[in-house]
Image (cartoon, rainbow, N blue to C red):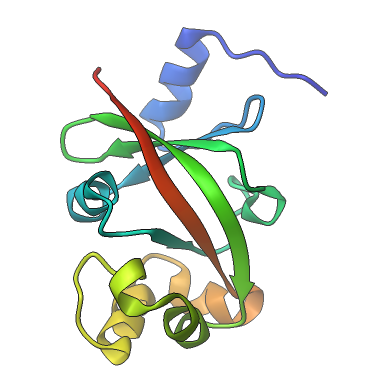
Length: 143
């Protein structure tokens, strides 16, 4: 099935914090710190848990994600280099490297605590695992 979104549809989806998929393009929000770290290339992996609104399990290398900076609405397109599924945050952080996943740095334990503080992560990681999305910035878009 092909879904065509007009700019008004996308604006309305964006307003409610939802993601959309259209021709293998995803729209996701990020806080300022990880957004900047991805833009600088110091954060190479974005960790995400299963959500009914975003089918990470269907995402493939080569798709595009537009990340929106939650603070200023600045947008950045990134290429997805890979998707890896892990049973828990510790396994992901060890395999991918904390320095590649966390924009805050710190230890594996601190990073696990941070993931557990995100909405629905603590209860969803044991159920669904966690996805490591390899990211590469392509371009910054201005609103």
